[in-house]
Image (cartoon, rainbow, N blue to C red; front, side, top):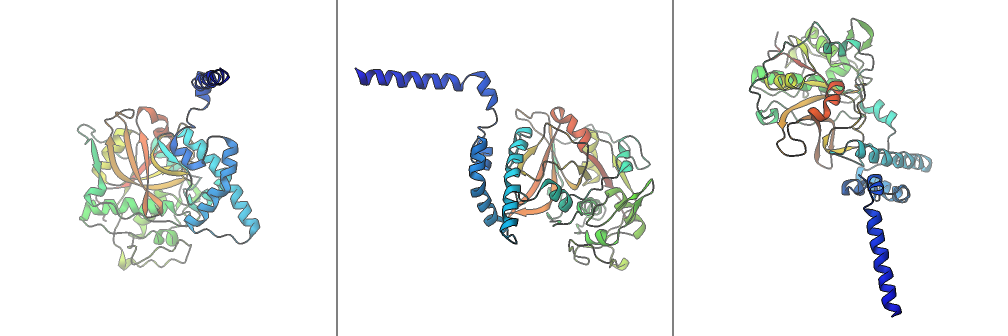
Length: 378
C-alpha cells in the first residue's frame, strides 16, 4: 500500500511539472531557449550553464581556429571577451531567429576590435547616403515587370571567388572591385579577378562635399569615392598583377596593366523591385550594410528585429534573387552577399539577408546600392 501511495505521489508530481511547463507565462519566458541551434552554441539555456561551459567552449575555439595568446593575462582577457560574445550570440539569435548565430573565428574580439579590424566603411558619409533622396548619380528607374523568380549571377560566370580581407578595414575596396568584376564581365564576357590592393594603396579620393571623408586604405573608405578614383585613374589592375597584402603600402599602380575601366557609376534607390531589376540588368551591386550581427553570424537568412542606422561594412552583392514559395517566408526575397572575411573550415561564408514585408524596415535603413554601368569602358 505504501508503494502504491508513493507511485501516486510521483504521478501527481509529474503531472504538476507538465502543467507548469505548459503554463503560458513560463512558456513565453523560455521561448527561443529550446532551439537546438542555440543549445549547440551555449551548451544550455540557463545563465549559469553558459558560465559553466564557457571555458570548455573557449578551449575548443582555441584549437579549432589555431589561436594563441602572448601570456596568461591575455588568455584570461580573451576568455572574458569570449564569454561576453557567447551572451551576444544568444541575444543575436533571439533577435535574428531565421539565421544561426554562435561561435565564429571573431569570438575573442570585442565589438570595437571587430569594427576596427574588419569593418571599413567610412563613418562620415552624408553624400554616400544622398543617393537615397537625390544625387547626380541616381540610377534611372527600370521597368520591373517580368522579373525572374530566381536569378544567380554565380551561375552566369559574373562572380569571382570568395576573398578574405584579413585584419584590414578594406571592405570598401572589395565591394568596389566585386561590382566592377561583374560589370566588366557583362561588357566583355570575361571574368577578371581585380585588385583590391591598388585601391588600398593608391586611392585617396575625398568626397568633394565633405573633404574629410577620404578613402584611407585599411582605415576605411567609400565605394562612391573609389569609383570616382577609378574613373580618374583609368581603371583597375588584376589581382595577379597587384596582389592583396592587407596592409597600407606605397602605390605601385601601373597604368599599362589596367584590366577594367570605369566610365561612370550610379546609386540605386532603396526599393526592392529596383534593386532586383538593377541586379538582373547591370550585374553585381556594391552595398553597405549595418554589420552589428556579422561577428556572430554562422549561416541562414538574416532578418534581425532591430535595425541600426549606421552602415559600416561594404559587400559586393552576389546577385541571387529568390522569391520564396514556402511558409513562413512566402513572397519575400533572399539576397546573398559575398562575404569578405574568408572561409571557415573550408566552407565559404555567404551572408543572406531577407527582404520583403517582414523586413521592410531593415531594407530601408540597412541597404544602399550602387553599381558600375553596364558598359564600364572609356
